[in-house]
Length: 268
Image (tube, rainbow, N blue to C red; front, side, top):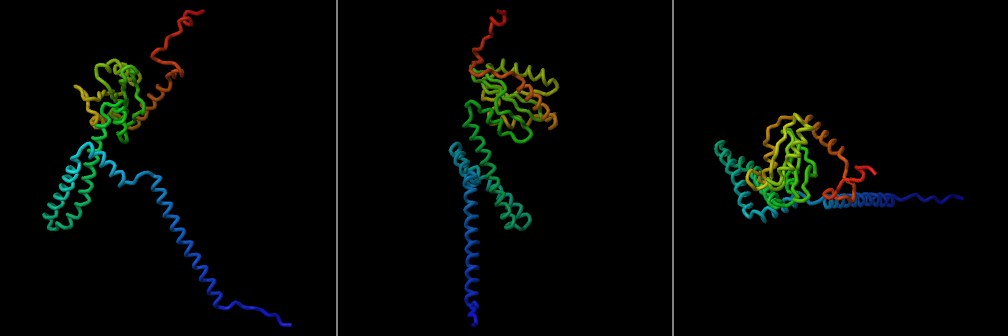
């Protein structure tokens, strides 16, 4: 009895191949959709983009200084004029004008950043911790602790410390007459532990002999550099070790009202 064997027809084989290719295309399309969704999710979770940040900075700066648009336009125009003059001298003004456009945009952004920094310092003026915020804008080469090194709890006057190649810089926040005692104590401590390290004093404020808040970082950067990077690191480690060696204040005790145990001193 002969067996009835069925062989697949060519049309059936081509149909299954088309289905496989269609499934592969659909899978690739879905992978692209998922990749785009992941990129959008990462951008949204990673904070605002550069354009959003520039818009926020521009809005904040314009609120404080309405002439920011004028200054940015002048910076952009100045870059175009320079490029146009160079192009006319070289008999190729179109090319140089096109080259000057991105430089004009860069100049406008730089002017906006400078004015934004002024606006930020103006908002911080007179607030507690404004000097610490100003010192946090210092770039590489400076070591600035987050907390002040000396505080007067009654008057809220503070002394911040910055360590850099010029040496140790003490920056005060508060009226100069009230800070004299607190500052001299900190200076004597530094001279005792760091006898060969230069110590500078910058009094932040708008009074006589004081440095305006927005000029504090620039003043520190303009100081003469006398130390190496290795010496700066060694000074920071030494001061950090001295700070950690001080006994901490027990919890629940007000340091301004703490009194010594006289009975324990006399003996029972």
